[in-house]
Length: 323
Image (cartoon, rainbow, N blue to C red):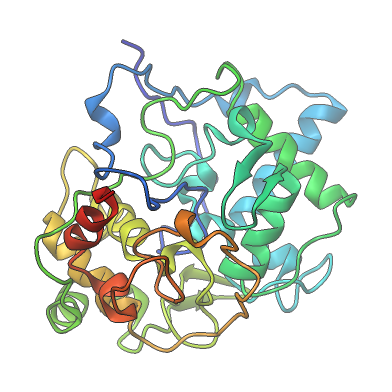
């Protein structure tokens, strides 16, 4: 079996929390949550060695794309040297280690799986559309120009990260893990106690993060500078899988510091806090394809919005099996 290899990284790393992942969600018609990524026979994703990026114009574009992912705010933040498009967070605050960390919401399968149909928009989306969504939702800003050097560079970097991944395939360890649903509602109060004990030292007592210069070293997880309520991590299943394998600092898939239930509770607490709002009235035109943990109605079933946000989710799943 191929082994995961982490490339050398720039000295500056934001090992923080959250932004919009490249994920697919559960939706009506699925009979059970997917198994964890490492339980399958799929080949394990191997990160390309950054030292092998060629010293060519194409290689320079790839390196620039990586720099934009790691230090988004320096270039495209409120005081960015290129243009102000985002809220001050960096893409790698969520796509960890510049989108290379195993089960850290990495970009390993992006180029191989796009363009693809996404039920949220009801359209076949390109990588340009997906990146644009990240800027508008997770970075609570505006999309880069689709023909800009910055958009071209980010796509070139994602293509390079996915080099060797066959078209249409999703290797083991890409994206984030989907945890099994708990048999109870996720508990924001319990999550708040966990946050105080394990997370506040990096992300702040009030979720405000820690900033150095133009960039967040540890990003805000709620409040005006954080991701908005249209971001992927505003869904508990995405947030829980992300933090289980990566948080608190030092956690890995092999040595997690949270149980599954703690990850769900922590997700419930963070996502119960105030954050920017984005109009989502144009999303999910086909309610049958709406993920069951999407926190805003309407739905194709009769379960209340609170249960869709916090669970328990199994009764919703069971109802979908009924003829």
